[in-house]
Image 1 (cartoon, one colour):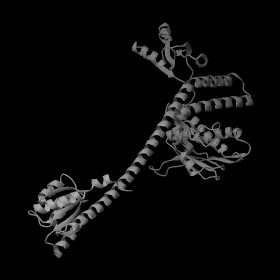
Image 2 (tube, rainbow, N blue to C red; image 1 turned 45 degrees about the vertical axis):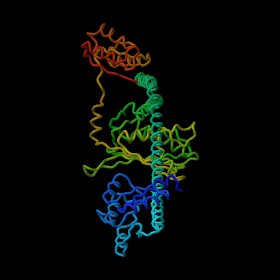
Image 3 (cartoon, rainbow, N blue to C red; image 1 turned 90 degrees about the horizontal axis):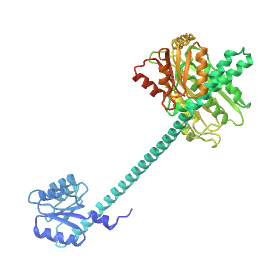
Image 4 (cartoon, rainbow, N blue to C red; image 1 turned 180 degrees about the vertical axis):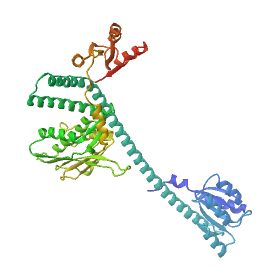
Amino acid sequence: MTVTAAQENQVSTLLIVEDDEFQLQTITDILSEEGFEVTGCSTGQNAVNILNQRSFSVAVVDLRLPDMSGTTLLRTIHELSPATRVIINTAYGSFDSAKEAVNFRAFAYVEKMDDPKELVWQVHRANRDRLEQYTMELEAAVKQQSVDLARIRSTQDKLQEELHQARKMEAVGQLADGVAHDFNNLLTVILANTERLRLMTHSTAETKSALDMIEQAANQASGVTRSLLTFSRKTPSRRQPTNITEVVESTTKLLRRMLPAGIDLICDISHDDHAWVNADPTQMQQVLLNLAINARDAMPEGGQLSISLSSHKPNTDADRGFVRVVVQDTGTGMTEHVKSRIFEPFFTTKQRERGTGLGLAIVHGIVSDHGGMINVEAEPNKGTTFSIELPSIEPQAWRDHSERSSRIPPGSGELILLAEDNELVRSIILSTLWANGYEAISVSNGEGVSSAYEARKNDIKLFVLDYSLPKRNGLAALTALREQGVQIPAIIITG
């Protein structure tokens, strides 16, 4: 890095401390002609006052001053302005004074002579030395600024990427939120009619199997939407005491139908009380399906996919019990770079038409939402292993839940007011209520709730109100009734 004339002038400033007026004027004139900016004073205290106001590249100090010695001022200058080069200038030079000056880090020691060239040369040398240090400091500052700028740019790029991802997830959430209502309404009809068929017919084993598959597929479809909503923080998961062994078994049955013949599926599960967790079973199945589908795509020529289950029973109160599910394949594996990014939303190594980049991000979101951890081990061409750990619950927790989940007794003709705008959903809810011993009347919009209540207010025992009703949503309709003093219990339902 070269130094320009402008930069050199920035450090070409001199302070002359000389009590002899003639000497002070002579030195000032000579060095001014050399291009230096010169400031002069006649005492050490004046020099200190000036140094408190500004700094100089070089200071030329007389060894003998009226108020202090030159070496005393030399020490003070180093304290006030460490970068200033100090030249001791004296007419009474001696070995001892020169030694003292060197010991106190004087840049040079010059004896006054009739020919001032020695002083001028030393001033130039001192100024050049200061200029070189200034250049080094400037280069270091520029280098540090470059590092800081690169760090700032890196931070900005990271924040920009996070903002981009946040906007993507917001779009996913809005899309899922919009689809979920209508989609889940349709699934409600499918599931309800499946149950009706199960009750209405004397099912053969083949019919029962078909109904089971319809019900399982509908629950999975609902789980996909709910997983997206959970991932985008639109809805919480529906956790309950869940036997992971049963989840793995049911998922394995599905996978045996989905996987190509070239993939050997191995299921290694254990049956014990500690395989229970507090989880959303549909989301847990979604996790396993996503991992299995990724494994399938990583083994286009076939291979082995294994799913294993184990549990850790706590030995002490401080120990953490957990259930571990391991999904392992013998596929193409992945590089360290890919492994570091696999849980990022929309990151995918698949072709555009084969992957969205949301599968593993949803898996990570579900596991994290359940208080669990997921780890991945992989190397190129050596397969991939995903390990999921979920906090286990005590057997008593699921036994209590099982007891609470016993069959609910039928109604005794209580009248329920239903508000639902979807005709198919309204029909299936009404028929379900009637089949379970209740009476029911219905309206299709929020404004009809009040009038229907007025017509049967002495008989109605419960409101069942869809949240997303036309004209007035279910919550607003209920609020209006509450403001009128109506305290009949209410259930708000939503797709």
